[in-house]
Structures are given as C-alpha cells and as structure tokens.
Length: 185
Image 1 (tube, rainbow, N blue to C red):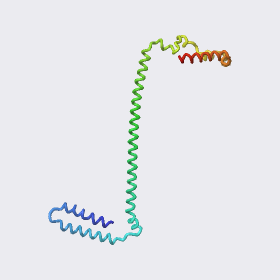
Image 2: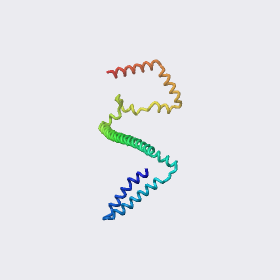
Image 3: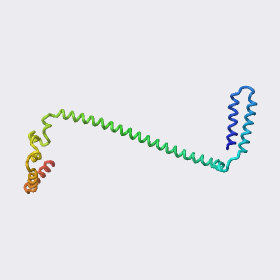
Image 4: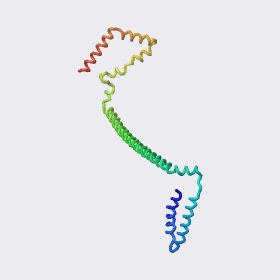
C-alpha cells in the first residue's frame, strides 16, 4: 500500500521538481530522486510491522468502504432534511400571505362597519328589531329592582310560582305559536 503511493507519487514529485529547473541540471536531480525512491521502497519492504497493526491494515479497505457508505447515507439524510426545510419555508410563506390577506379583509370590514354605523341615523341606534320605543330601554331591569328589596329570595319564589301556574304556561304556549306562525310568513 505504501509502496504503491511511493511508486505513483515520486514520479509526480520528480516532474514538478524538474519542471522548475532549467538547462542540463535535470540528470543529477533525476538520478538522485530515483535513488531516494528505490531506497524508500527497500525500507518499506524491510520494515517489520506488528501483527496487530497488520490486521488493521488488512481491514482498511473494508473500513473505507463502510465510511463511504455512511457518508452516502448522511448525504441522503441531509438532502431529505433540506427538502423538508424548503417545504416548511414555503408553507410558512403561504401562511404569512394568507394572514396578510385576512388582515386586509379585516381592515376593510372594520372600515365598512364604521362607515355604516356613521351613516345610519341616530334614532335607529336606540331601537331594536321589534321597533320598541326608547323608554323601554330606559326601564329598570327586574334584577336591579329585586336587589333593592329587603327579601329578594321571596321574589324568586313568587316568580317560580307564577311560572308553574297553568295560566302562565298557556300564555307562553300562545306566544310561542304566534312567533312560529309569524316567522313562517
């Protein structure tokens, strides 16, 4: 393995060194580098390596292939993550655009609401759909009046008694059927 590197690497070094020299000085440099190459190859052959280190060198090709496979898997994972990030960014952009559109619509609706409330006459704001007179809205609420009494629970009992009265129930049924017939018209 080391000898292969020496055999292929030294000629490259030789040519790079020789390309810098000019004239006839090539031959001594070339012979000297060739001698160094042969000597290095001889030392590599004679070099004694412990058996445990040789085992590591034998498994080197397999380890390199395994690392290359891991690198490919990591690259695939990285590409998938990049695609997911791009999709998330696109989705976020779409959501931002829809939020901007909705905010614009909300502004226009608010403007329309303020325009319609300003354009309506002031008398209609005090009336409801039943066209009740303004004095109806100013009448005190029954709860407020009950709070002023000394015994409000007595009023509650009376209201319960009136609601359980058959006359009240008949009147309530009559009102419900009347409202149902009016809404059907």
